[in-house]
Length: 451
Image 1 (cartoon, one colour):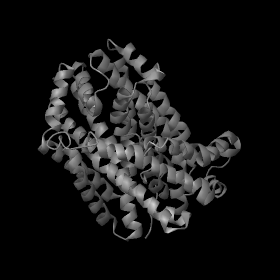
Image 2 (tube, one colour):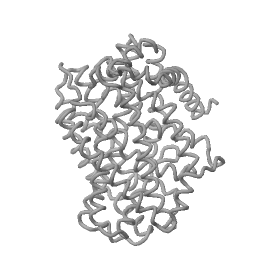
Image 3 (cartoon, helix red, strand yellow):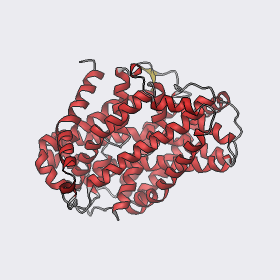
Image 4 (cartoon, helix red, strand yellow):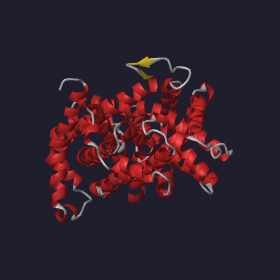
């Protein structure tokens, strides 16, 4: 079956940025920073992003572009065994699981967008009031399921349209707008009373605050933040022509994730510290802080609508990237039509997401190792399955396929890039073959209690 390609280099770059820069950077990054000590975690996250995640990102894109197949087919072709195909299938399953609980949070943003339009978000006067507002919503089974379903329906609708008209076109318009609005919110945050304390929390590290759990979370966030280990970047790479300069595209993606994460951290923590709240607020941190700042701003009504519209769209871009590998798998391997594959991927992810949607209300009492279903499935996905997916990608490129053969393909479309930047060639080769796999293995072994 004929494979659709990206229409342009810019389109691919914004689609990849849209996949990476979503609620993982704006919703998840601030709250796990708050729970893991602040600046020391931020620096560790940045270290992992540069020395582990970026090489893995390039490896996954190379796998996809070389084969023009879904992750299972790509791994099977390059690994030359069915076992490698099953490892690629695991990464597809990971993205599918992620899309199920990710849709729940994105559904919250849709619900808040509707509330912003009806002026309900700009009448909050304290963190306590904002917390109660949030808890009232997420504890309602009807609201939780309805927003989850509505979001999944819209994501599935975009995926029905296809790569160029759906994924590519939406990202090229909305992602630049999100950058601008986050920048404005961060500037507003810096004018608040305790902005200095927030900046100290974000940028003055206390290394004693780092725990083994924080190190695991930092690696997981660095990989999750670039949509790695989920089959996404292999799939997106499969829509690339050989004329694209992969490293030149990958670096802006990584930089974008760092910038957006820090802007979100500044926007949220300046409100948290100025309102006298604690930074360890957890999953509801963004939802209990930003409505408060909108309530205090001139033009807050319009900014609240614009922000939750864009954050909703950012969630959409990441959601469709997590679902695309499943669709690509059924399209390639089972020869389903795109519409049939999209319908079943969306319906399946919706069903799997129902327990996550109910985890903050009706099923709050059901726990796994002290965590509700949402926290448990997101912990396993982000801190175990995604690192495993990243590990398999660099082992495939660096050892099974072979680093020399892989880099012959990677250099296609780069022109004189490597001749001008020989240090980048050495950095990528060494990291893909040694640094990235070793760091991931050590942290996974620590998580399992082996070391």
